[in-house]
Length: 318
Image 1 (cartoon, rainbow, N blue to C red):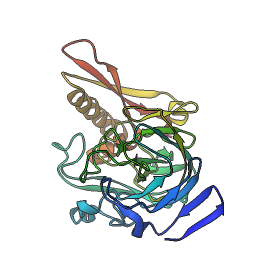
Image 2 (spheres, one colour):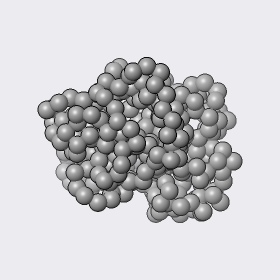
Image 3 (cartoon, one colour):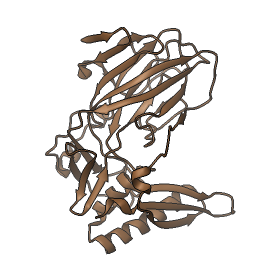
Image 4 (cartoon, rainbow, N blue to C red):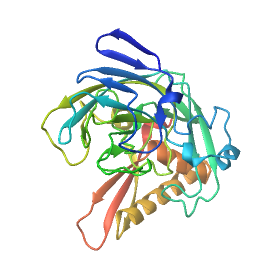
C-alpha cells in the first residue's frame, strides 16, 4: 500500500484492490492506523467491485458474483478508540467522479415481486453537478458513501447488506459533504471502513441500487472518549435537500398495515404516474424512484394503518 503524507494530518490510501474487505469481522487486520483528528482520502470502488463497466448491460447483471459486491476500504485502526467511545466521521470531499450505474437486480429491491427481470442504466458523471437520466430529466449529483461503519463486538463474519448498530450499509443519502456521522465504538481501535459511494439517491433506495460510482472520498476521523451512543446518528450542517426542494414536488401516498406495504403502494403509484406522464418504461420509472424520489413516513400512529408519501422533485424535469 502506498501512503502519501502530504502533511502530518492527511493520509491517502491507494491500491484499494489490495485493501478491501467484504462484510464485517472484528478479526480483520487493519490496513492503517490513524490518530484522532486525521484526514484520510480513499480511492473507493463502486459497489459491483469492478464487475460492471461504463458499457454494462443487463446481461452483465446475470453474471454478477454476489460475494464480490459492496467491497469496503479498511479497516482503519483509530488510536485510543475503546468500546463505549464514539467515532465522529466528517464528510470532507468527494471528487473524481467518472461514470455510474443503477440496476434492477432480480430478488432485490422493494418491488422485487413485480420486477423479476434485470435492467441496467449507466450515467456520465463528468458534466458538473448534474447527470442525465433520460432526455429532459437531469439528476443532481450529491455524492455520499452508502456503506460506512465499524467492527461489531460479536465474533464472526456479518454480511454487508443490512444496516446494523455499527452503521454499515445504511445508504443515508444525507451523508454529503459537511455532514458529521457518529458511530458507536464496539472494539479496540474501532476498525472503521467505508465504501459503496453513490453519486445520487432518493430516501429509500427503492430498487436496491443508487447511482453507484467510484470516487475519491475524503473524511476526517475524530474520537470522542467516554461518550456512548447505541446506534449511528448524524448532523447535517444546513438545508438537507436544497436542489430537490427548489421547485416543489409531486407526491403519491400509500397506506398499509406496515411501512413496507405502504411504501410499496406509494412507489407503485409513483411508477404509474411517471410512466403515464413522462412516457418512460416501468423499469426506468422504478430506477428513477430509487435515485430521485424520497420516501417519508407521513404517519405511524393511526391504527391499524400507516401512511407513506413518495416525493418526486419537480426540479429534475425541464
